[in-house]
Image: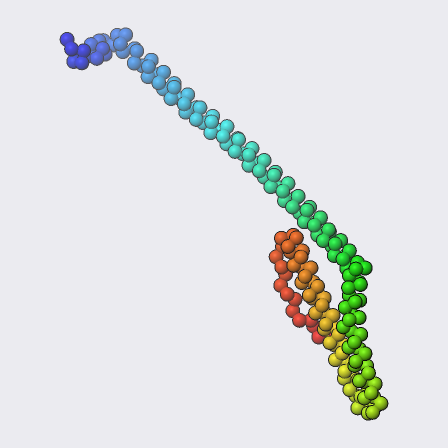
Length: 180
């Protein structure tokens, strides 16, 4: 007889002999392996979840440390910049530069105006007194305005320098000063 046309062994033994008992054992073994694979998959999933949770906790700790260090170094940079600005502002070299500029610009202007005022005062004292009263206010206002403009320009320069050093955005320009 041809082996391909031969009936399976279970069909040859309809009474449920040894050929029938081999199949349930194989089936149980297969189910056991399937359960083992499913159990292993769940165990791997649990272990992976634990590893990912541990990584997340570690990353969170690193982020908190980084934020703390960033805050600390920003404070240190601010203190250092403040000290640098104070050092520059109180520097004898800066005083010398400011004094030389005042001597160069202010002295000739005052001398020229003072000579003209004294000549006019000799000729027409009443007219010059009225003029002096009006000019005094405008000169004071102009001087204060120039001082404020210089201070604003200095503030802007310091802001630009500090923004470059610390990576901050530049503050918007301040509005015009309030009238006194």
